[in-house]
Amino acid sequence: MKTAVEELSPTRVKLTVEVPFDELRPSMDAAYKKVAQQVRVPGFRPGKVPARIIEQRFGRAVVLEETLNDAVPKLYGQAVDEVDVFPVSQPDIEVTRIDDGEQIEFTAEVDIRPNFEVPEYAGAEITVDPSEVSDEDVDTQLDGLRQRFATLTGVERAAASGDFVVMDLRAEINGDNIEEQQASEVSYEVGAGSVLQGLDDALEGMSAGEEKTFKTELVGGENAGEEADVIITVKSVKEKVLPELDDEFAQLASEFDTLEELKNSIREQARRNKLIDQVVQAREKALDALLERIDIPLPDSALKAEVDARKHNLDHQVTESGLSRDAFFRLYQTTEEERFAEFETNSARAIKVGFVLDKIVKAEELGVSEQELTNFVVRRAMEMGVQPNELAKHLADNDQLTLAMVEIVRDKAKSVLGDAAKVVDTEGNEVDLKAIYTEINGEEVVEEEAAASEDEDKDKSEA
Image (cartoon, rainbow, N blue to C red):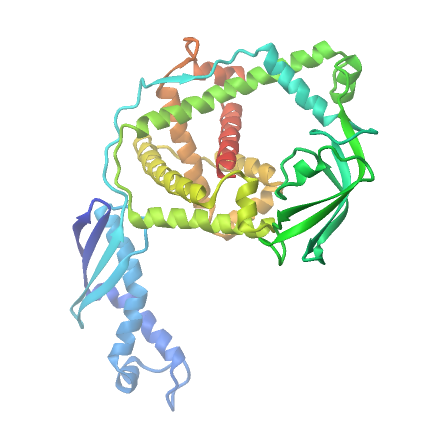
C-alpha cells in the first residue's frame, strides 16, 4: 500500500491511497462468504455457492462492492497511521480507480489536528491567591454552617425579603382557571428570585390570610409565554432564626465540644482548601499562559461539532427544566445569544487545550496506570452517586475507557505545566507545589482533590 498526502489547508489533508489487489484478498474472501449467505441458487445450500457461480449469476461487481465496503475503512486507518496525521473528523472517502486484479485507488479528505510546536514552558511566572486564612474566611464558613441549622419561626407581621411564606397559587387567563398552573402549600423564600416574574414584589408586605393578584408571563405548561393573572394567598409567614454561636452550637453542628475547637477545625480545613486552590490555579494559569503563546488554526468541523454538542445539551436542559425557553434563560440571568457566544469561545478554547495537552502528553511520555484509572472511576462514581463497579462497566460497555484515560493523561499534562512554573502568590511569597503535595498527606491525595476541584469548576462554568 502506498499513501500520498496533499495539504489542502493547515487543518485539512487529502490522502491518495494505492492498494495492490493482493492486499484485498482477506476482504474479498469474506465478501464471497457474505454474498453466498445472502443469495439463493438452485442446487446449492445457503452459504455454499461457489465463487465462480456467484460471479456468473450476479456479476463480479457485487463482490467488488462488498469487498471495498469492508476493506477501505481498514485501509484508511492503516494509511493514517503510516503518514502520522491526527484526524479530528470523519473522512470523505471516494474510490477513484479499480483495476480488477491489479490495484485500487481511493482518496480520503479529512480534517486533522494542525502541526504546531509547543514552546518552552519551564519557568513560566504564575501568580496565585495566598493561602493565609483570615478571620473573615472562618466567619463565612461559620455563617454557612449556621444557615444549615437555622429554624423557621412564625411571625405576626408582613413578609419581608428573606422570610419564608407558605402560599397557594393559581393562574387565570381571561377569567378561566388554568388547572396545571395551580399549587397548594408552597413554601418559598421571599426575594429568592422566582422565574415567575413579579412574585417577589407581590409577596413583600403581604401577611397571613391576605390574597393578591398580579399579571405575569407563564413559564411552563401548555400556556407558557402567555400573560396570565396569578392569584396568591399567603397562609403563613416565617422568619429564619440562626442559632447562637456558642459551645452548644458547636456540639450540635460538629463533633467538637467547644466553639473554639470548631473554629480551629474550620481554619485548618480552609487552609487546606486554599492550598489545593493554589495547585489548581497554578496549573490552569500555566496552561493559559502557554495558550497565549501558541496560534493554532482550528478545524471547522471539530469546532462545529463541539458547539453543536453544547447546544444539544442546552436544549436537553431546557426541556428537562419544564420551563419556557425565555424563563430558563431568565432563571440563569442570561440570554440565548449570550450562551451561544460563550459556546463559540469555550469550544474553541477546549479544542485548543486538547491539542496542546496531547502534545505535552506525547513529549513527556505520560501514561495511565491501572491504579490511576481505578482512582478516576471511584472519584467520578462518588460525584455521580453510583457504585464504582457500575460506572466501570458502563464505561467499558460504551467504549469510553479510552476517553477516561485521555482525561487522566491530560490532567497529568496540566500537572507538568504547573510543576514547571515559577509560582508566587499575590503577596510575593514563593509557592512550592511539591511542598503542598507533601503537606497534604502525599501527592496522590492532592492529585485527586485537585482533579475534583477542576471538575467542580468545569461544572460551574457549564451551568
